[in-house]
Length: 156
Image (tube, rainbow, N blue to C red; front, top):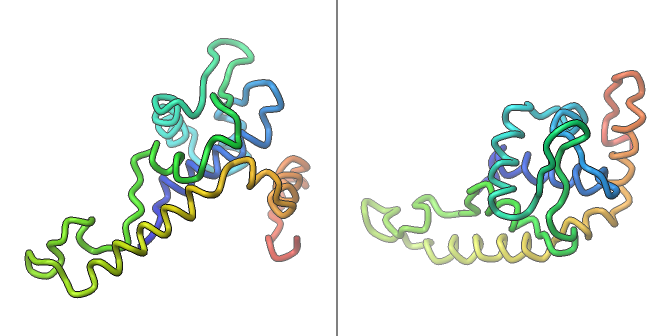
């Protein structure tokens, strides 16, 4: 089981937005620069996030995106769901046909694990992530830029 780039990038971009919006809008170009995520990929992700009511957009000069609802109402699971990401520890995508068309011996174990992961991600909100000091420290480093120098996370 692995969360793909789509889910990881969506969560990262939403956390960046939550950290930086302070009542205004944030451009995808700014998120792209800070998080080193392709602008075109962010546009695809934010289209899905907007359609699912997690972000709203403002057009024109000074436009951009902001959270459509409060950070304490958005879970990591909501974000992952919005970009059509599956949290699935099975090899059969939950279909039960993993052993030559039949259910394998451990199918229910992997289904239970998937449910536990989903519940874990449902319990984590953007607001709870914003409260974490280590996340604030990384964000601060991204803002200071340090002349484009990369800072290893182990030094925080």
